[in-house]
Length: 206
Image 1 (tube, rainbow, N blue to C red):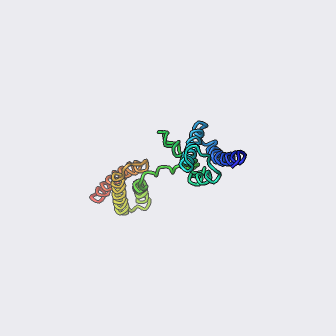
Image 2: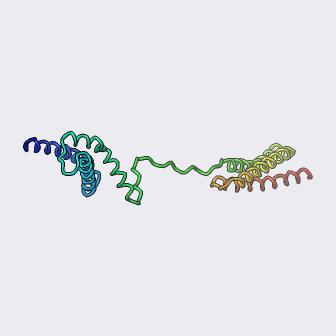
Image 3: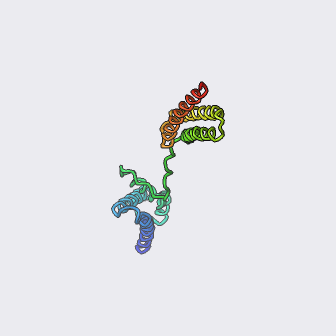
């Protein structure tokens, strides 16, 4: 082989090696630092030289076919990109912050429970209006006997509804504002119901 042919062969082999190294450098560009790119490219170049020496022996100039065979044994440039990114992340002990996806976490669920204590307590307390209405109706009709069933039923309903509201409120944990209202209204209704029952009993005895 003439000197010109040998030079052309060497140039062709060198161009193949440089093309592979440039492809790896471009794949890493903008993703890792310049120093890291140079390290990766240098390691690949050293590996290529090592494989060529094993194939051709020390001191022998590799041919184009030798270079192509060695490059075929190496990973493509995209593979070096993935390995380098994984190594860069693994070298940093601090976890990477999560990417902002625009998703807002769901608000915490409200405290479990119903408004039954408040509804029962307020409804039972409203039963207290039966006492003055019944008294006025008895005066206007001149028949006081109607007070006994009206007051008795109102007192029983207030005591039952107020007591149930208190029991439901005490059983609820944690207690919400509506539960506190139910406890207060239920206690008041139960107290008014007791007073109404006492009045009905006094009226019955009288």
